[in-house]
Length: 429
Ligand SMILES: Cc1ncc(COP(=O)(O)O)c(C=O)c1O
Image (cartoon, rainbow, N blue to C red; front, side, top):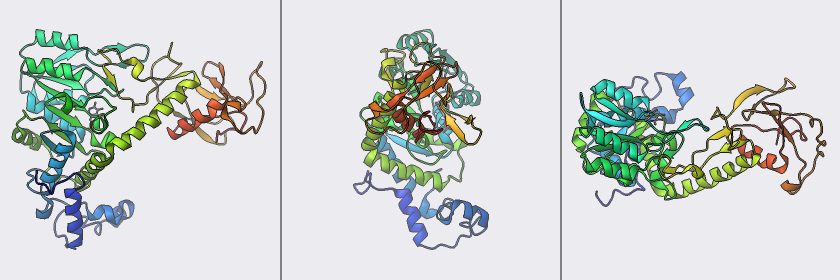
């Protein structure tokens, strides 16, 4: 890579800025002509946005055959992610997963994968006619979530199907659970199989040393990265990463079978800008995220009837590692919880006036239940000294929440959930 191409650069963004300065008059697609042809759209999205909603032209390179600014931006991304090659994708991680599978297997080839793969992987099999060899992920029946693949089960699948061409792994699952990817890579490579990683939920693994190993660091051959999920880019923008033993030219041909010939520069520039941000500030950004999530998790767990699980699930195998930035909350506490439910739902306040969101299973108790002392009004100071509030759960059990409720309420509200304390009116402020 030329010395001038450093991580503080953003070649696609810079090319778009040059294009704007050149004050070109568009006689080309898109037909909205920088918004002039569609004032309603321009009013809604803004001039700045429509000014750069352009199609490929010489100064902006072309996603199908990048030779200048897109190629440079992809090189910077590959370097930032520790990959040999990075492809910018504008059809979501769905298109990256499909390109990955279509590269590795063809009609009749076997591919080992967990049952809980994303539909994009299954649909890729429909497209290419490859045959899945499923490994059943372990389940946590009390939490109601699927876990990772056990190494022994991957080993067994490889033993039973030595002719398989590839192994696909989720790194991590939707719930932040990681399998032992390094060992899976070692096993697969020992048997001449490629390793493909669905990394829709792990862009941040590449930029913080306190998080689980990324697929590229673990030696996987290809990885599909949802930059738009935890990397900050626009929805639908994504990346496909390749390791050193993958024929990038062939991958590119596969991508071009289904990829649009009109790649959106809004999406491409968002990938470029987000890569720059992560490369320069990722460690610090995700250090902060980890701190905030751990604080929220502690406070939620201190309420008593919720279980925000974390690294204690790690068992060296089906939960080999855990993404601590993932905050999932199970109702009913660590024991006897009934599985994960949506984090919040809209309810009508008992007085019928305001609408609130409340934590699942909890509702406002406006007066202390029988046998409980009425809380003192208006106390201030040390949260530990604050009067207790009451929360009533779906079974009518009453929980005293005191100072903890105030801080937990703050956390829940930041998460989009409102909690209530009875001694300060209907809303906890
Ligand atoms: C595990 C996994 N893989 C792939 C995808 C597809 O990503 P996209 O929505 O960007 O196409 C998702 C989407 O949520 C996912 O959860």
